[in-house]
View 1 (cartoon, rainbow, N blue to C red):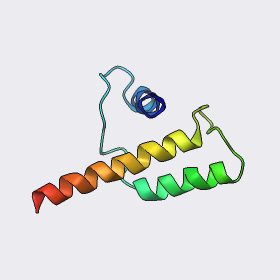
View 2 (tube, helix red, strand yellow):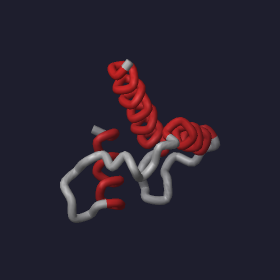
View 3 (cartoon, helix red, strand yellow):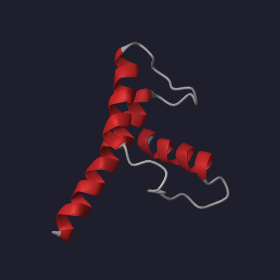
Length: 76
């Protein structure tokens, strides 16, 4: 539920008037972003500036990277 909330917040931020979807053109640096959110959490910063947990964003990013890897492996 928490990870889906991250999707909702991101969609609201980038495409407020469109149905919930993953706009892959907005960001592709999932591992870098995941590490940044993990580091922020490890340093005691629980929530990001939009009041969403850093660990939630970390989870969303690693799942996004996994999805891309799975899609890539199906192509080859």
